[in-house]
Length: 538
Ligand code: FAD
Image 1 (cartoon, protein in one colour):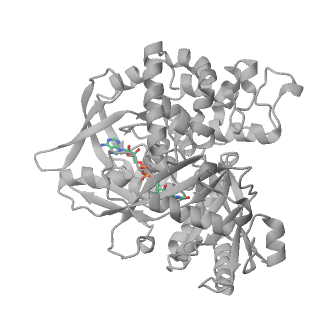
Image 2 (cartoon, protein in one colour; image 1 turned 90 degrees about the vertical axis):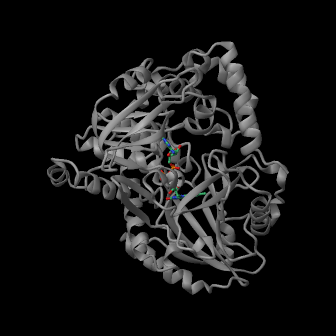
Image 3 (tube, helix red, strand yellow; image 1 turned 90 degrees about the horizontal axis):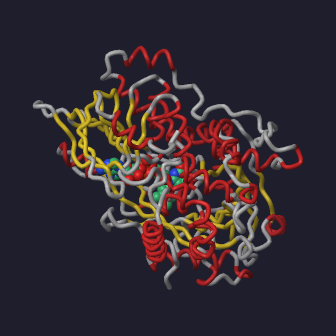
């Protein structure tokens, strides 16, 4: 779909009247695009940088009900989230996978264990799925040997799910484009267009790809602002007062051998009693997250602060003391900014995670919410958008919002590589993973690869073949698109993957059409970005 020449084609097709223009290519925009394209609407999504480069590649990657929201009586949010989790587990097999959790209880905890037991009971009831169970201290240590035994009283096991957030965004966008939607990355909205009445009727778009000075004025019946933490900036153009509180959350990534976990572990931080997770992801172990006000400009990449590093290290050293984890063990760090609706709470963690919809002079803003609830946000936005389209109500009533959000895939028992003989084909888990990540493109990913590229990239669950595919068919513009989002090597490999940069170059440089000078520039930019924002500088 994103073959050579797609970008020029997309730009030459945008000069038409669209039903809906979506600004922002994170999970919120991708969800709206997906559902709007399915309704048969003429829909265009524009993303100023890379798809998912905002918060949607920097989450904790959990597809969850948000157990802690029960504490603040956000029962509706928890109910919606667990229902969406179940749907995504059904439809996104291989991409959204079940994850067992252990919630450890210690003598020092301010909240008694029975409260967690009661909350987990309600959590399971909301999902119509009884899965939690209590264990004593000895069983907890057996389930998670690195866990601190000092003061351990016992704990609970329960289930949620996890995903690759950036890949979820990309799969939604790809499937929407297969259904007739159009999505362009590195296309930034510099201004909104308005009628004399002040009603927003379009956008001014600027191509951000290297060497291009393309601009366009594009009109639509409805313009949706799905720019997450940036939403107030576009709202300011229609005199909307700032309403978002930007909260930074940061994570530390450890190699699995330094903190081997088979399940997620939820611990209450010894300092402030906040729940912090340690969980396995893509062969590594992640610790997170923090929740602090982010007062820095959004043009600069969010980065973990030294106070956040200390906070997370304190938890990990207390929770898993025998591992003797220290700063040099950290593979990478990453930070994201939550777009949370500002209600003036003193404690950032007490701000509601519900989403909101604002309509100001025709600009429809959808903000807040969670990765997990993107489909519900998309439907709320679409209902409001369709109310302004001539045939919108009919389209909505015909479609209903119960259809699959991710396309059905061939059974994972079907060989992904039909041209190889049975012995060469991948094991069922690998097949399912590829189908989940690439959807119906999975066979093409492997078919385009040289045989040696079918091997795993050491230390990860990715194959070299995925690099080639991403470089030639996934709208990559810069090296960080490839290494941080299409594949997550920048988070999972030592030195952000730079130690194997020669092999990476041999696979992708030609596919990307970069000459040596461009390669060197991209490499220097990526190295600088990784050192500033992803390396643990201590
Ligand atoms: P974004 O992903 O930020 O997308 C907005 C996009 O708009 C950006 O890509 C940006 O480049 C683009 N944009 C901005 N201005 C313009 C412009 N002028 N023109 C064009 N494009 C523009 N949720 C969960 O369900 N589970 C979790 O485990 C979880 N963990 C989290 C952990 C952290 C640390 C954080 C910060 C959030 C977490 N969340 C989680 C919440 C979830 O990640 C966010 O709610 C979600 O990713 C927000 O998506 P979005 O599309 O609204 O915003």
